[in-house]
Length: 140
Length: 124
Image 1 (cartoon, each protein chain N blue to C red):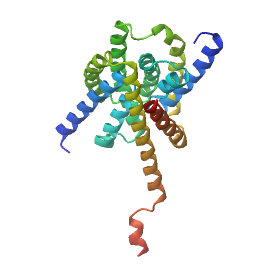
Image 2: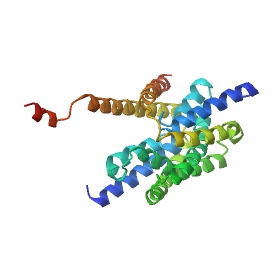
Image 3: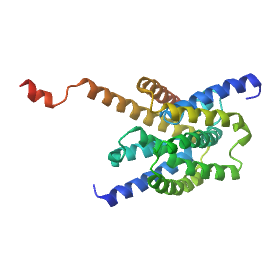
Image 4: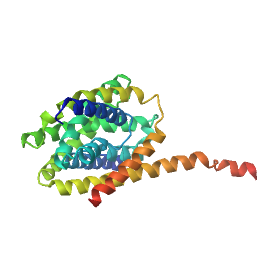
């Protein structure tokens, strides 16, 4: 992004994406979609930018969540430790994967996570529409 | 399910989340949310906190991954500068809005966008 107008536009989109991510919308990949498909950034650069973006947005959100008592610190700490082990492995592999394959892996992950999210929402709607099983006994 | 097996599966899913997140830059939170929801959802009376805790658990791994990529010159930190403040502001606003609004239809719309983008990435 070179000129000021593009940067302002970019900052507005980034704020919106961070708000949506804070609300649990978009499977964490909205920024990568915007960077790769709209701005034409390559997959390797988009990966790095998304990681940095996540640190800033999630850390800001963490302050609020911690103050509201929503964080189970013991659980989060132990999960973080194991996630860091995975990170060491993933980063080592990631340094040797070229942008083409990274894009394919990311595409596969998006398709899977999006489908999973859609199926989950359909399930919730079905439960809301169908009467409870106990009602059958009552009708009889 | 036995407690030890549950803990082992949680640890494995956290490792998988770390691998995915550092490899493609996203997706770790989804993996953790899925496993926490399946294994210990009873510990979260408010289900939205599953997502909140998953997100929190991914922060150190992301920082580690960034440091490792940056040490190899694989992250354009300068190119990120204009996104840093919007990211923090947006994350802060989103966390304040989380308990107040229902995002069902927005989630559906974005899930469709995510599927469409994923298929496009696979095809092109």
